[in-house]
Image 1 (cartoon, helix red, strand yellow):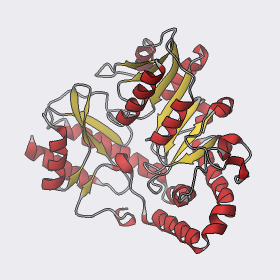
Image 2 (spheres, helix red, strand yellow; image 1 turned 120 degrees about the horizontal axis):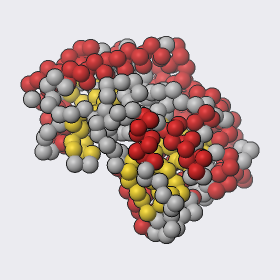
Image 3 (cartoon, rainbow, N blue to C red; image 1 turned 180 degrees about the vertical axis):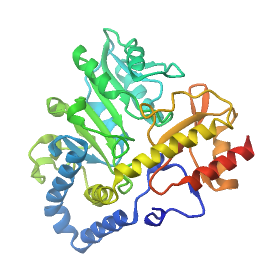
Length: 376
């Protein structure tokens, strides 16, 4: 499927997880929306955009398992999480519990507002090597106290590439009366997602990663019982111009002039994956990912952070490497070997992460193994 993407053929691209890669047919649909906007900007932005957004919301809602009226589009998960955090009523007697694997910029966001509002951010450590999801839930729950008001959890972590048991934790949190905010940036089209069945209070997802929509396409889902508490980041026209049925939608989805074309292309991204039998694509990539991980550990002498199973791993896997400077290593891979992979610190370790999608094949994995064999 390499021919269906714009990726530079001279680069071995093993980093779909960072920003995604938009297939040519989806990118062409994106450009058609941009042209449609430019042909009559006033008609598009002043009248028709709300109907277009409604169609796109409901298509996404069906895909992720919730009502299209319970979510709206945002440019990225960072915007969504910032909106949620600013809307929370937390104070000095409260705690927010998260893992030690959360995305760095959003940890910084939580710590900023925690300091400002005097509530505590508690990071539950990850016991490696991990065993089972059931064991992980028990360990994570040891971090819950009487002060825990919010659990913030990545369903798939960026740094470690691990699939965490978000559904099981949401169930325990609901029984305990604790609010759940799930960061699913890596989830849509990567692993099965049904938000209604999981039943979190808040779910944040990206469409420009594994769904492969254009860059700057994400969403914020909020359970109906919390929607009236969501404060928009920007106060704009609201119901004066937006005919949407609830304040949750009309106060948030239009916050000033912007190009909504990426949002409107999400139905095309969903259709693209249907046309190309994405269940089979995912399974091939998961298998390639696990096989490559085994080959890497024949070269890299470190301990795996989890079992090599579908319970923990989808299309990404992170490996601990004994090097001093991760950034230098990343750019060496790119500059010397034309190999694009993320390398980053996690706690006291440095990890590099494989990431396989439709355009990758065994030749890409072989190239990685050859480079690692030369370097290690």
